[in-house]
Length: 296
Length: 254
Image 1 (cartoon, each protein chain N blue to C red):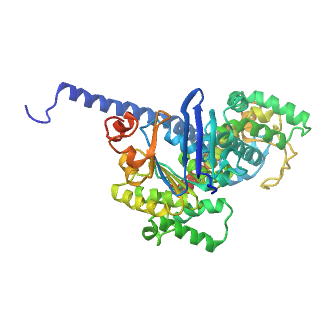
Image 2 (image 1 turned 30 degrees about the horizontal axis):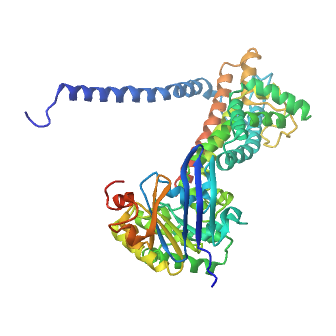
Image 3 (image 1 turned 45 degrees about the vertical axis):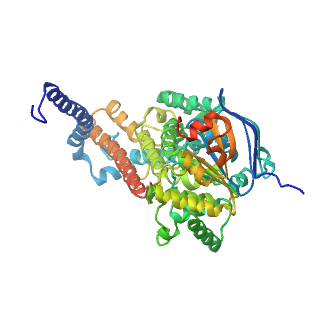
């Protein structure tokens, strides 16, 4: 018998290998199709309307004409405020849970709370925000109340992603620090955080950017159908104001406004998706920059 | 004549993880400037024993410790500052851990954590420790490169330099030669022979011959119990007290 001869088994093995590659790779490719279709269709339908003046001017004629500045600015306010509130609380909470908490009933309770909070539907968060921030705390329907509601909603995912980033720092680093007489905090500050900050930041940004598309939680707590503000002025909202938001605006234009131009909803959706993708791209760029400085 | 207390005195130490007891009443004492060898197969709780000494065992959940450990006559559970205890005991882990910091910062880490900020003092400390660990000549021109970029053997010497950086009085080496080549091992062993003039050394090793080369006395730990503890010559002679010691050091089992 010659060396390296094909046997029925080896032929089958090679065929299965090729089959597995094609099927698995196909599935991975299929993942991209919805995104391309959505963005492509939105571009096709909505792009003709997009212009700088569309972004920077306010809706007019009962939302049928003009731009979406007041909605775009409202979304930016809500997301940035939610980020400012949720990021520090979420990150500090995750640091405690991952670095300090011992395995006892209190810790388990907190874990349980975090997991369950992540599963609460957004409309329930909306009702909570209405009760807690709008009514009880007396913030009224405002950007403040709405962004606090968004922050509560996004906290559990921020905690989860931060814990994951912290857990990626090898345990042996911590033990080495403890062995030479470093306290837990010195270990966290000098070794754990510098080596997980890229993961923490990207996780936080990605999670918060998702809230840009939320409608239910802001509907009861601060977003309105229409609000007149100065076009093009980035400081046109006060935190106690009610505001418009892209997600809400899209809902309004598609369901409440008759005779709106056909391209308008697509253009609004395109701006919303574009904004989220832009933020995500920034996060990914940030991660690759910070990771190039990664130290092991 | 007043005899000073032993450097380390362990009495009836029991350690359990949850309900599983791994150390079943271990007692021994180590006088100053001794090299004390601990040999024994895997799972005999050698590493757990070391972690009890500097109380890093407390970072493991669900442990129960009883018995007493005294360092310089002081019960480690009653020391006012646990960080000072840990600085008194240098620890070298089996696998080299270069912290993701520069070589300089790796060694300066412990002094800084202890509050040393003076630059000259830090630099002097770093140089002294890297020299002691036989690493200075190889890295003196690139102290700002990352410790993690060094080779395995260099990282292990960096680990030793870091363990010396807080000027310990006791140095515990936990199978330090697992990840490094024989030549480097011999260099470090020479370093240890130098160091013993200043400090007390506990040498945990899987290589029975290493204990034979270095240790004054050797303890055979097996399944969390002390089988035998005697002068190294006796342990490695043809007639240790316990048959299991003979079998183990002769390579008949384990």
